[in-house]
Length: 139
Image 1 (tube, one colour):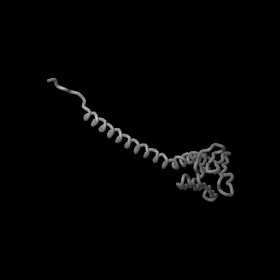
Image 2: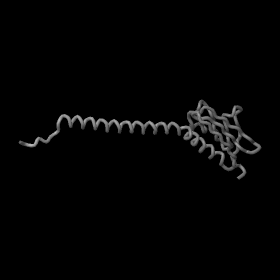
Image 3: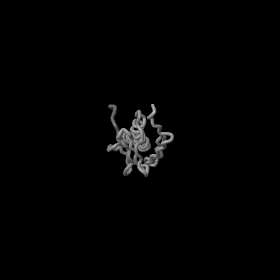
Image 4: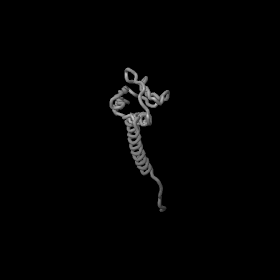
């Protein structure tokens, strides 16, 4: 009698079930991974927007001889002697006419002429940021 080696229906069903379990496990792990990546991206969005604002504002504050010329009465606009202005308008912050921040809930600029500082209080995406910048006009 000849040896009958081949794939039986039972072994084929076992292979299909095993492959389905492996594919399902890989799919679940991939879904979990990408879900966490998207969540991380959403959590860091506020910090990214503030860092972008901060880079423009620090550059303006650290310019030698640059002072604040005008501040809007409601604290939503700062104009520097260089002619540049930073404005909070319609949930965004603008550097002159360039939008540098989105999703800004509130922003308040406070000028202290005695200590020569500018305080910035802002809320971006539900996260609050507060900083005091010292003007470098005496350097």
